[in-house]
Amino acid sequence: MSMLSKIFGRKSDADTCPADVIRMRDGRLLTIRFFGHASIAFEYEGRHIYVDPVMKYADYGRLPKADAILVTHPHYDHFDMEAVEALRKEGTAILCDRTTAESFEGDCYTMLPGAAAHPLEGVRVDAVAAYNTSPEQLQFHPRQSEFCGYLLTFADGESGMRVYVSGDTEPTDEMRALHDIDIAFVCVNQPYTMTPEQAVEAVEAIRPGIVYPYHFGEVDHPTDVEALAARLAPLAEVRLRPLA
Image (cartoon, rainbow, N blue to C red; front, side):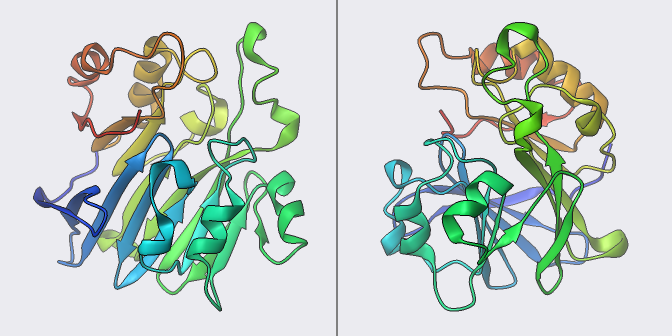
């Protein structure tokens, strides 16, 4: 299991959005903000990286402009052009799957599964295939659509931190191949993504230092995240945040 410095603080931004502040091995700070559902953000070395921003979960016009925006796939609860435009400034790097890339007419990094990009100095982003594997769920996120999860590496070498954001997926061979993961965001939005059993399987495979269940609401039968946390506790440090 990866070794992490402890979470040493928790604060709110201008929108009173909760955040965890993590001290990396070299003393630098990584702030993770939780807007809701699949919308999160990272602040590293004064730069702001947003993942799947959707206006429903935050007033992005009031938040710091984005140095990079990552979109996992084009579904309405992950891709919202209004939110992207509210965050965008000159030089903002847009990273997205090939379907979402059509909305930007090529003015973006088109991230196919397995691709890597360095949108910001000291930040590497690897695209990880995200798709359904259960026969009754294949229509939700087909493998051939080439939707993405992302592995973000902040800094290089032993001082670096590796953060996996699953996007909408079930456990896949590509996910199981991940290693040295410090933090993992694991989706449990049923019936579209992982069941609690599959989330346990995923965490057993990648062994993150910290796991955040996310994307677990807005359905008829939301995941019992407290029960899931109890099942994950022997495998990783579990942190529950307002990500329904």
